Length: 112
Image (cartoon, rainbow, N blue to C red; front, side, top):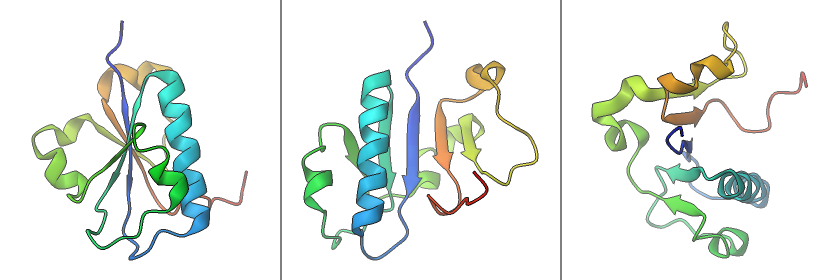
């Protein structure tokens, strides 16, 4: 059985708006349902956490450290999920990665 995967959003904004909170809560629910872990990194210690995220704290790891610090020794196991990537991710790639990092701004790919 494959090891559980971790999905990461590097949160670089000084606040956490309602749209981002909705996106994060949806990702957390889907990760929980599939047995994966969801982590929001680079969270400011002063960030006000919206209620929808507080209610899901058992499903979301909030981390003040950045992804590069958290996974310094295993950077080669991180896959950057970039909608502008030249190569598509395939099921055959699963064994290469343990962590999937959302790239770009969530919800900004309007080509879908």
